[in-house]
Length: 300
View 1 (cartoon, helix red, strand yellow):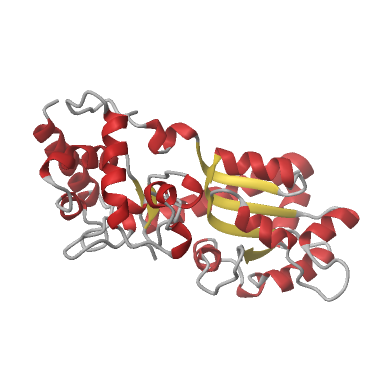
View 2 (cartoon, rainbow, N blue to C red):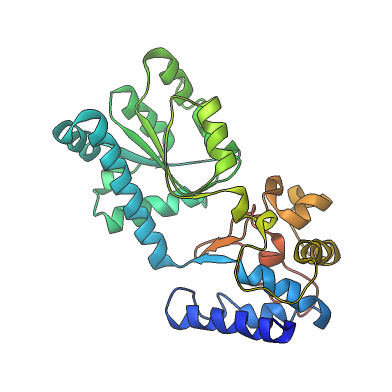
């Protein structure tokens, strides 16, 4: 397809997604304005990235949360039988993943609120990890809620962090002493992150609504049937990232050349949620740029 036709088609697809309510309207998501950041000859490669971009609006996130809840229920039923499984889940407590540097804005806190509302779960079953560990020690099921499992470093840090002043200090200690009943429930998981958790934290049960393989990242482009008349699409994208990434304003921990181009852990993800965009998503979508630069989506 001719490059100009391809760009128009991609923008038209984005407009249709907005009209259908699957994407938020501007200024929350700004596909046409974002494409105008790029020089004319670079817009077709940028349009390829846009064509492969996935956006989860609030309604979709709510549906994924309920899907996670049903997956947890069905998994417990398969192991315990219906009666005990439902009793266990009805008595479960929910908490957030704090990550390497705990912050009240961590996305898990948002999902605790959203699940409380969508599943109509009592407020007193949502608590911080310290109280959740105390409940796990007493035999209750604990569910960690998160939006994305990237490298696995955040849940790993939460799992090993000392919360109590006596044994078990951490969830890892509880698992080592007598086994723990903990589920990590995430909207989206990378295959790499899943493999790491299964190898390093075998006592942690992981449930994900959607799993991303390597083909779902920038390295898997092009995977759409719709293609522009570029001889080397991966090469054009590489050149685009090399050209524009140095102009972006990114957090200090992403200032290396590779993470400027591909995001945290060089994951190269192509997705965003309405509430936030993972730092493992291409910064070209969310990072601030020079004067008059328009982001496609916001970071937080």
